[in-house]
Length: 197
Image 1 (tube, rainbow, N blue to C red):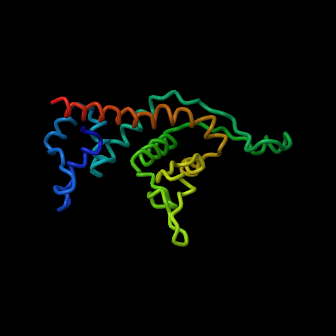
Image 2: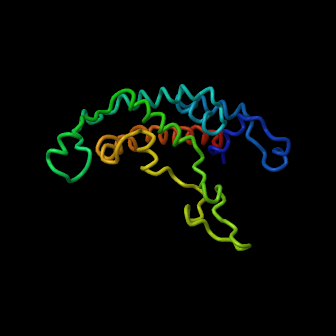
Image 3: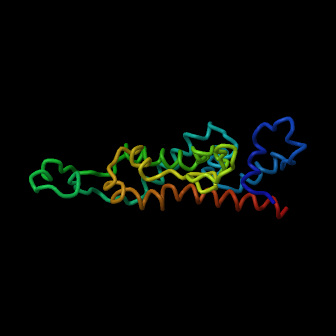
């Protein structure tokens, strides 16, 4: 069964790799990548083979995908809920999704999709030792992975929670980050061809 872990064949094998798990020949993996689009191939090489030469190409592809999305043109933000009308008028500002923000959005999507998302509490193990007893990690519920929260996303993009929910959230998850999911599916379909041959 050839899966996404087959892309590790493009990296230098450790000396003990042939004993523990046989690798699919790198020539076969390269042939499978030729069935993908250039963007999916670069994304797979960046994420699974740690080929950082593909970083700018993948970022540019995500930026182009973000540019094609129909973002809300602008929303008038009052700077908070409640308060008097006079205080709302003073803090009122017009927020719009422009190229610098789209650049940060695409960079966030790239970093979020390529990062391993290891739980910071248990270091990805899912279990922790406390006073010589083994416990399930309460932060990741024993999975070993922790997704990025909306609060971290808002801080990275330098937007308020209201702006994030109204302007960015839906399009970010469905169209920008969703583009990386499409590339993952494309890679999986291409690597399935290795099993058919």
